[in-house]
Image 1 (cartoon, rainbow, N blue to C red):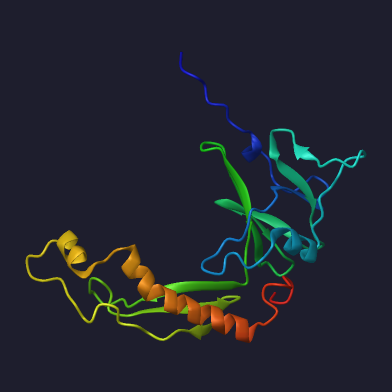
Image 2: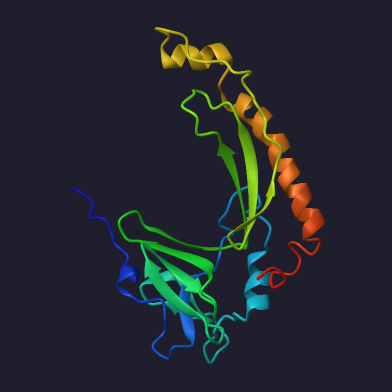
Amino acid sequence: MVKQKVRSLINDYDPLDLAGDAVWMPAPQGCFGTLIENGYVPELALKAWGFERILDSKGSIITHPDDSRVEKFTLPTGWSTRRHHEWHVKDQTGRGRILIIYDDESGVVGSWLRMPFDAQSRISKEPKIPPSDWWVELCHLGKVVFKSDVVQPYGGEKLQQGEEMEDFYRRLGFDQTTIRSVMDPLDSAALQFLKERFPLFPADPNAYW
């Protein structure tokens, strides 16, 4: 006998409550980002932004009738929910603050805080394998505020004529240890800049928006 998969119906519901001042979502599990993704404490950020759990008359947490992981929260004045592949909670200026995912097929349900900062590793776009130049850019509200030093981790090594890609990677030791040896100093430089430029980070979640 084939066991039938039980599907959640949560995706059939708009997270925005009918009253227009509340939102259905799982309590955020953390931050969605890169090397600085653990900057905010979800509960503190929600409180700073004006979210509160809505309780019933007995003081108990209200959960969604189709998924007990989904709770009901107040929605700050002027904030809204919009869907583009996933649900997004946006502030009064239209900036995304929370990402909500409901996936009935896989059973994934969760939410993550967005951050005003985004740190991404960049590589040169030259047609070389591996790339000759690596660096990190730190953006704040979409604007690049810091670029780390550029490093050349492979000394200009190139794929030799007739050499297979796997052999090339093996020859240069292109593994996770090698990658981290390149990226760790770049990440550290970005974090140090963040600490110096935004000393309140991450204690005050409202200080950067």
